[in-house]
Each structure stands twice: as C-alpha cells, then as structure tokens.
Length: 199
Image (tube, rainbow, N blue to C red; front, side, top):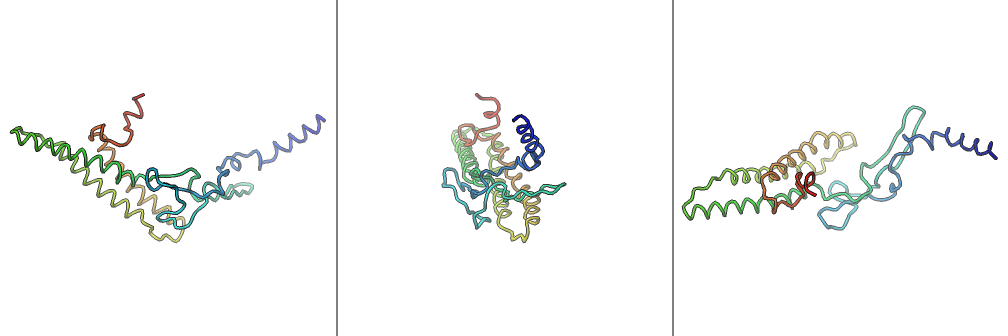
C-alpha cells in the first residue's frame, strides 16, 4: 500500500502539467463567461459596447506549451464587471462638480462686488481654466477611443499604448488638479486624503 501511494505521489509531482505554475496559475474558471461592462454607474451590465460589437469571452481561453515556452490566448477582458470607464466619470461626476464650484465662486465674487468689496478672482480664474481643460482633454480622449479600424492586435495595442493611455493621463492630470481645489462637499469621488488618512 505504501509503495502504491509513493508511486502515485511521484507521478503527480513529476507531472509538469499539474505542478507547473506557468500552466496552472492563469485565470480560467470564468473563461466561458462573456466580459461585461457598466457604461454608467448603476447601469445594467452589457456584453457589447463601442469598439466591441460582438460579445467576447473573458479571462484566459487557451493555454498551450512546449518544452521551452508557454503560449496564452486571452481577450484581455476581465470576468468581473468592468466600468464605468474614467471617461464617464470625467463627464458625469468631475465636470458637474467643478461647474458647481465655479458657479459658487462666481456668485460670491458678484455678491462682494455688489457691496463694494474687491474680490481676488485667482481661484475662479484657475477653476475656469481647468474646467475648459477638462472639456478639451475629455473630448480628445473620446476621439482617441473611437474605433480606429486596426487590422490586427499589434496595431490595436500600439494605438492604446501611444494614443489612448496618454489621452487618459491628460484627463487624469486635470481631474487631480481640480480635486485639490474644488470644495470637499462638492467633490463626488473619494479624495486621496480620505483614502489614505481618514478612518
């Protein structure tokens, strides 16, 4: 009996298909499930969206290997519900908050002027410039994310690397600046300070 168990253990340990993490650590339990996104907060998840006109399976679909290489085929889409994308947050959360704050500053400035006080408009000017920049960078990101008709995956990856990611970074830069200026009670997202230091 002991020799049978030892033989079985030896077979299992020597079997690279079962023991090699290069083959067994890929996310495959949900690979038969379609990738899903939420276009906006609270929206019903969907399996198609702009640039993804047909449903695509999520996670890793195929793992192949040779004696020296492991080949993995994956859609690049997660099995968890993704989204809403940052572009939507810039348009539907950050922009409205910045406009409200801009309006509050303008009303305060007008009220002080009406009673004869000089008001420093530096903050209003800065918020106004950032709101315009947010509109411009968001529009640029939308244009960049439109399907560009890449004929292969390498061209698509290069498009995202060289065009989409820099456009996302530009939106993020403006949003981060607005976060440091817009009043906390108007800001719709958790701030860095809240995430790091507040209980």
